[in-house]
Image (tube, rainbow, N blue to C red; front, top):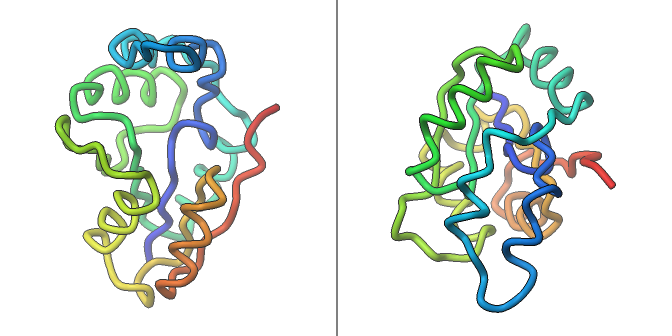
Length: 141
């Protein structure tokens, strides 16, 4: 079985960089350039480590592929190892629920995915409609 975790809002606290995308124009480059500075969400990290004792862990994120090196370094620095990491293709602008449904389907069918943990209620509800065990992370704030 596989446990799937989102990163931002589940493992990483992105609030310090949200100011880059709350106004107009949105500065997505600055927003994603700061991923290496995210504090850890300790509850999410503990859950990931716990799930890794029972299941293979896969991380999926709406972060673009160009963030891979920074994301992998951040995971290592915060003791989360090197799980399989699936990121948004750089040119993909689909809504998170649509993107993540496709990403989870690539990971496996509902009977192979023990749980998907995400902080976006729209994503969680959409995955549940597709038959995946999904749960809303406690997150931060």
